Image 1 (cartoon, rainbow, N blue to C red):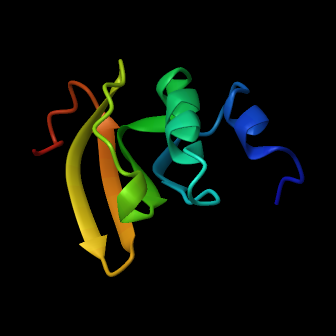
Image 2 (image 1 turned 90 degrees about the vertical axis):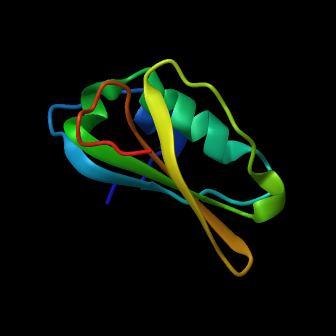
Length: 95
């Protein structure tokens, strides 16, 4: 457990790579986009075939063009949307 600001932490370099990064920030503040931008700008966090999963309220979801991440799936469960992103160029990433 890291007791630091999550957005600041995502901006740091990372030695370990993760297959799944789950982003579930406070809703209605657009923080999910900010967190995804941090990962998009620092791909050291992700393994080559890793996913980023962002959770948000359906009213918050918007298509967003990241430079390194690709939205390959979006699912709604009641009042929750999960958006699934992979790295552009990942052969295993299906749209």
